[in-house]
Image 1 (tube, rainbow, N blue to C red):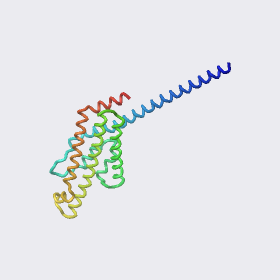
Image 2: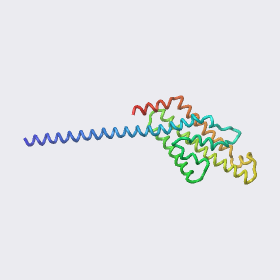
Image 3: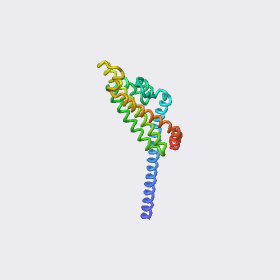
Image 4: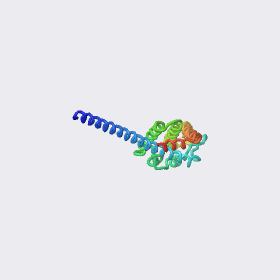
Length: 211
């Protein structure tokens, strides 16, 4: 009789242990699912904010082939005018100054990381297109910042050596840097057009809702 009791006690103990293990496994699964959901929402909101900024300001983001983009500081301010980027907006009027410069570089790295994470936490081509858009946006902001630094150097050179704007442009190779900025802007436009063509926002939001 005692042997039977020990047997059933062992069975019950084993059953409880298995039940606890299954419950723990389910809790981990739910926790991972919630974590993925949170990450998807977080990174989609970042991308969505950048999309909205472009849509609000795309008529400003143009580069003429024959003239310096003297309003780059204003355009940069408009393209960083949301809560995610507001901390780095002032770097355009304080180029190379600390802590603006460091904060800006940190945010640029964060955007690169966000672009990579988007491709991992979402699935399909939609994830690739959205990640590419974020990366193109980051590249455009970085090129604008570089160009603003060049404009300030061009102005100083013009004043110091009493050069015309045209002469100063050649001294700092302004045309080359303007072309690099134009390419970055064109790449962003193409990435945006692809988002709309492939209905990326709808597909990404559907993935989020599925949870």
